[in-house]
Length: 382
Ligand SMILES: Cc1ncc(COP(=O)(O)O)c(C=O)c1O
Image (spheres, rainbow, N blue to C red):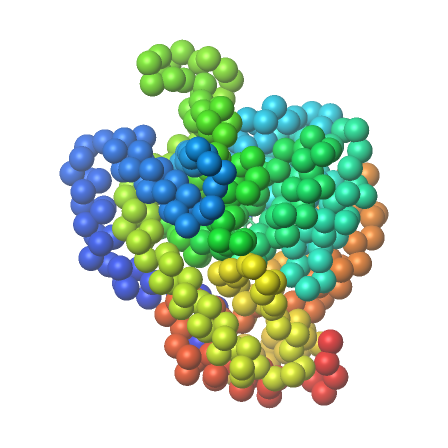
C-alpha cells in the first residue's frame, strides 16, 4: 500500500536542490577526474569549516576532515588510526545501528556493550565507568537519533582512564553540545553520508574529523593503502581503499549549505509533534545545553507492533530503529557479553517507533500523524 505520509522523502529532498545537484554532477563529469580530486578536497575543507564553525574549540585547535567511503569505514579507520585491534576492548552501546559494532569487529577488537540513559537513549556514562578493564582502549558514544551523547561526563570518565574517544556522529550532523559540534569533542568524529542522513549523498559516503593532526593524517594514509601524495603506489603503512568519490563529494558540497536550514525544519517539526502528540506516547527529550537535530523522531508506546500496523493502515510510514539490540543478534552471540542484561536497551527495542521526520514534511502532515497516533494508541501508556 502506498503511504500518504512516508517516513522519509528522498526524491523530494533531491528535487528541492535539483539545480545545484545537477550542476555538481555535470561539473564532475566534465572534469574527467573521478577519485580524490578537487571536489573531495574542497568538501573536506568545507565540512571541516562547518564542524569548526560555531564550535568553541581549544585555542589554536583546527579541525581536519578526511572523506571516506561510508560511516562504517569512518569508524573502522578511526579505530585503526588509534592502533586499536585484536585483544583490545571498545566500549559502546547495543542500542545503535549495527554498523557501530561491525566497525569494532572489522578492526579486530572486541565490542563491550553498555546500557543507555533512559531519557536520551545515548551511552550511560556511569555504565561506561563500570565497564572499563585493563584491556579497554576506546569508547564510541553514539549521538543516536540526532541527540548528542553526554560528552562532558563521558570525557571526564574516559580521559583519566586513558581511553580514546571516537564519536559516532552518523545520525547527528549539526548537533551541538554547549555550542560545540558533535565530532569536535572526542579524538575523532565519524560521519555517514548515507542518503537518508541529515546530510546525505546520492550513494555511500563518510568522513572522519579530528582536531589532532596526527590522527587525521593517519586516517588519510589508511584510506588509500598507506600511500602519500608524494609516493603513490608505495605503501608507507598497510591500509585499505575507502575513498569518498568526486561525484558524491560534489553532491555533498551542493547540499552542505542547506544543512542548518534542514535541521531547523526538523526541529520545528519536532516542536509540532511535541505540542500535538497524545499523552500515551513518551516523547524524545533535549537535554539542557544540547541541540538535537532529529535525524529520527522516536517515541515509545505500549503495544508498539499493533500501533505500527494501525498507523500503516492509516497511511503513515514508520520505522523501528532498532528492533534487536546488537548483543542479542546472531552475529554477536559468540561474544562473552551476549548473555549480559542491558535493561534499558532491551526495553527500548520493544517500545520504540520512528515517526515521519524529514525537512519537507509539513506541519499539517505532522498534525495528521499525531491524530493518527492518538487513534492508534492502546488505552494503557508505556
Ligand atoms: C549510528 C550509525 N553508525 C554508523 C552508521 C554507518 O554508516 P554507513 O551506512 O554510511 O556505513 C550508521 C548508518 O547507517 C549509523 O546510523
